[in-house]
Amino acid sequence: SSASDDNDVVVIGGGPGGYVAAIKAAQLGLKTTCIEKRGSLGGTCLNVGCIPSKALLHSSHMYHEAMHAFPSHGVKFSSVEVDLPAMMAQKDKAVSNLTKGIEGLFKKNKVNYVKGYGKFVSPSEVSVDTLEGASTVVKGKHIIIATGSDVKSLPGITIDEKRIVSSTGALALSEVPKRLVVIGAGYIGLEMGSVWGRLGSEVTVVEFAPDIVPTMDGEVRKQFQRSLEKQGMKFKLKTKVVGVDTSGDVVKLTLEPAAGGEQTTLEADVVLVSAGRTPFTAGLGLEKIGVEMDKAGRILVNERFTTNVPGVYAIGDVIPGPMLAHKAEEDGVACVEFIAGKHGHVDYDTVPGVVYTSPEVASVGKTEEQVKALGVDYRVGKFPFMANSRAKAIDNAEGLVKILAEKETDKILGVHIMAPNAGELIHEAVIALQYGASSEDIARTCHAHPTMSEAVKEAAMATYDKPIHI
Ligand code: FAD
Image 1 (cartoon, protein in one colour):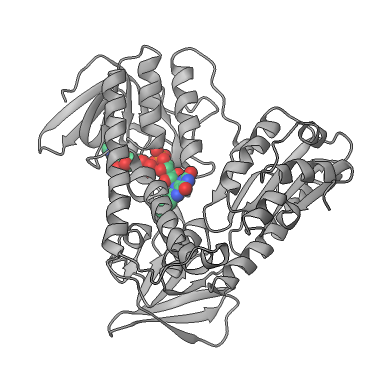
Image 2: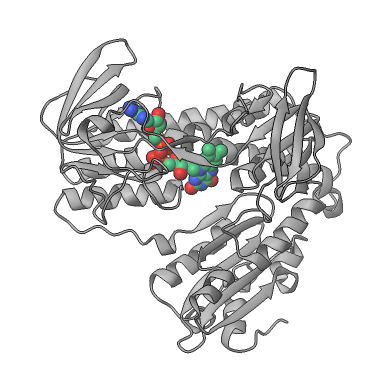
């Protein structure tokens, strides 16, 4: 890859924000270069995030189903075993095929790809220490920072990626730990806890806050926590980790109630630190060109994704907003559309969130707590999968659909779904919110039978009228 001087757009970072921005820019006829230090495209999401975690969630789910669900469906076999190296190999193959796919898309769209660490020398010049050991300068009229985020470490806890792991280490353990302690009950901790729990680990999740997944609707969260507990996951909420001792054969954690009080000890073979992620701007030279950041280290941008430095933009996990791959992609497209003189728009209020556990929990829009806090008069429509024929047919009827609508106008404010395939089901709600639909709009839309989606229709009916099947 040769760097060139006449780029319209230079993107630093090849994650979902950066690579999508680069492809879109090229599609809009802009000469584009993307700089990535990792050696492979796709960023956190594809290399050590969304994709490998979903691969392991699916594989471990298959094992769990074989053990616990197949017999009741009349499918029997004499033994089921986990071949962990094979499971990891399937995950690695998925990742490498997908990263190669993005390289292919770069070629197809004529995006110039520079492998190396980029840093600003001026608002229109990025010097790159290439992975091959050379140094080069890439110039561009518009430079987009898409450097993403990194694991947030906790004071006094050193991640060695063997016994004290981040999500990256938790995606690549060489054996199933007997006891796994997860610090932080966000979606990453619960997903990785689910993977190893299904494969046989005793999983304890320690969380400082009183609740798991703080962004979740309270009522749904309660059912979700109960479901995880039924699967064997243990929770120590309102608890802080005040010490980690790795000197012996087992890791010893010292715990203390969040409000202070008597200390207890918890033993673990592996500890996963999943207490959030932090914007990554190390070595980028932002001070040099004077890019403004907030206290949390996030780059500040306006609604056109422009920083305070003209010609310099930022998107994805490195700016405020939900730290999610699909949000980063939307940012990337909108940012480039502005650069190309078109109009771009990202509505952060309609970005769906999904926890890919079993069952999945998906949501879009406001939680009941948020609606209450706004002081809006609202109605709630709920429908349990216990009353959905497809869910009963497949003997997987845990969960519900919950819809919040404004009382006066019936406009949908938020939708929350707990179901095996909630992450797919949520999208009709996302479209509804995007189009400002009422719950009656969903209820009067014909849904195929028998599908789990019918529960969305019936919850919508329940918002302003009566559902049929309960
Ligand atoms: P990143 O994906 O972090 O990409 C930034 C890239 O920039 C990196 O590849 C980095 O190497 C590169 N870079 C940084 N600095 C430089 C530099 N100076 N020069 C050159 N290159 C540089 N999100 C979801 O939506 N769904 C999920 O299911 C999901 N699961 C996740 C599971 C885990 C375990 C983790 C950790 C995250 C998960 N996420 C998920 C979050 C998701 O990965 C991020 O929101 C997303 O990757 C952000 O995209 P980005 O492009 O902003 O940054």
